[in-house]
Amino acid sequence: MNEDMLVSLAEHHSNDDARSFYVLYDGSATWDHPGEPQYVALHLQRDQQKGTFRFERATLSLPSMAQS
Image (cartoon, rainbow, N blue to C red; front, side):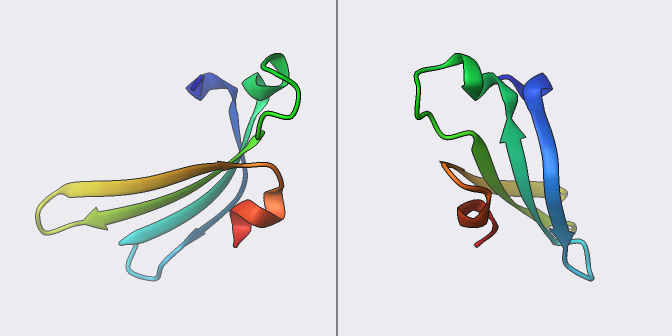
């Protein structure tokens, strides 16, 4: 994935900043095969006591799918 081609469309953070949710548009997908998913859903979990993080990501075809 080309990180410099990602544009944040929406983001939400928990009150304690332990979790963040992002909907990103992948501009590089327009140069791939027709029909390639152009949106990335990202869920970031931070363990502030340990100083670590985990994340899950999925590429999806519609921004509404990424938001859910």
